[in-house]
Image (cartoon, rainbow over all chains, first blue to last red; front, side):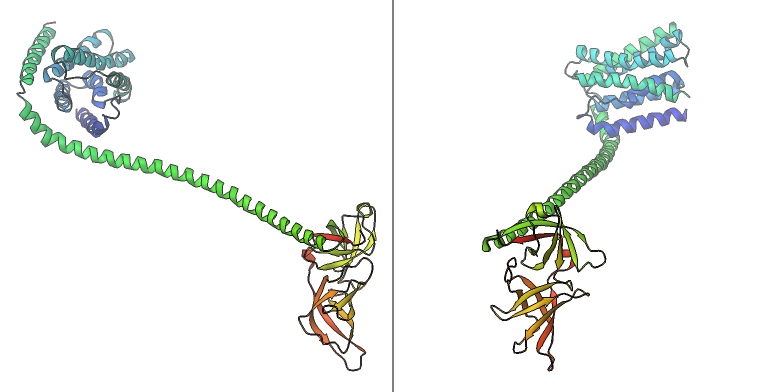
Length: 149
Length: 266
């Protein structure tokens, strides 16, 4: 349990430190994004919900995105990772490691699409943003592999 | 499945509610409070850390640039040092040739540039071997000089490709000298020790230490006014018919590298 909170704090700290330079390197992978699959897959429910809440608030405060859209996108991601993937693969299977990283892309896709539809102007879709989500998904695979031990 | 429906229902309702509340800026005060009270200090700390980190990274890159510049400047320094010595050599050669040209202009003589290829190992002050011989126009009796008009010796034997010169410091050497401009003549001989002796100086001539002794130019192949030596000590004996002096030669063995053979008859 403590391990997951420590991971959450480290991920937030790294993202906050990188925050001032993200204007210059918007394509950077976000560590909190990359750790979403791992936490939702392996953390106990309480830690998962804490992560959910903190990440939601963090993205709400650091972006101009709507809180409802963030919660809805993250909720869908959590559902995909916690409920759907384990129906097809074992938690520790390598397929799960990869498939869960798609959660990051699902989160990004819903976030962008819903923002464009319901809150236009709250998001600026750029290649850098898409690259950032893809890189975060790639990092998520590595994080799953490294941290699941 | 019920759980899933319930989850979706709660998520949908919660999202919609928060969506509309956020659209009406209901949470702006809370966001401002959290932003100022929590995120801003962390962001500022992170920003400071980032600046320091980037500063450290810049320092690393700067150090690498400095190293690169240092290597480049070292290479340039080596290059220019090489150039300096090359130009220095060219300057020496230029000076050498200027001296030779000056000498050649003054006299109607041919200068044959010769390299010293050997010394007599038993008597290094006695004889040298030069790399020019009969084929180059060298013949016995020609004067061998340094560019600064210092008489070194006379050609004593000639072969096809090389020649030997007896140095004026050799005890076998005899050179006619003049004391002062157009003054009386005397004989400069060498010695086994390499010292020069000025002999047969009339007693009425006042020799002074430091006086320069020049060649008299007597003899077909000898140039006048070549430097022979400087008076170091004068021996004047009442009973002797002549006085004599010890001269210090103007060259040493290490100066003998490139010399000129002077062919006056040309």
